[in-house]
Length: 249
Image (cartoon, rainbow, N blue to C red; front, side, top):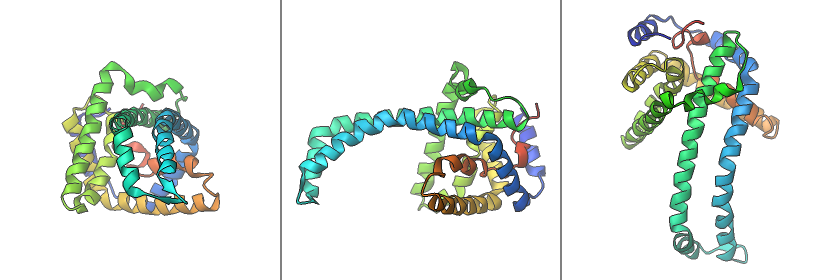
C-alpha cells in the first residue's frame, strides 16, 4: 500500500486515461471476477431476504384488508400501518440499515479480491469477510457513516452538489480496501483528489455503462442483471489496473 502523500502525488501525476482503454480494461477485469461478483450478489440477497419477507408480508396483508373492489383506501391504509406496525416498522428499518452496513463491508472484501485476482493470485472465499476483523470493522462503519453524512449534506444543498460528490464518494471503498492503514480523513481527501482528477471520464463511464447494462438487461429479460452488476462496480474506477490506489504485490 502507499502512504497518504505518495497516493496524492501519484494521483496528481497520473496521465489522462483513454476511454477505450478504460472500457477494455473494465471488460477484461470483469471476465476475471464475474463469478466472485455473482457470489457477492447472492450473499447480499440471502442476507436481505429474511428482512424483506418480515417487512412485506404484513404490508401486503394490510393492503388486502384496506382494499375494496381492488381500490386501496389510502387513509385507512396509512392509519392501519401506523397503528399496527408503527414500532415494528422502525425496528425493521433499523435492522435493514444494519444489514446494509453488513453488505457495505462485504464490498470491501470484494475489492480486495479484485486486486488479488488482477495480480494473478487465487480466489479465497474467506477474503470476502476480511474487513469484519476487529481491527477493520470499526473504521469501515465510520467510513460508511461519513459517506452517508457527505451525501445528505450534498443533497440538502439543492441536490446539484450531490452530482459532483457522487464521483469522489465512489472511490472511498476501493481506497480504503487497498490502503486500510490510512485514517478516515486521509481516505476522504484521497478520494476527492482522485475524483476531482478523473471526474469527467468517471461520470461519462457511469452513464454509458448504465445504458449498456439497461439495454442488455432488456434484451435478456432481466436474466443478466445480477451477472452484470459487478461490471457496473468495476467500471467506476478510471485508475487503470488500480495503479493509483493499490500497491503492487
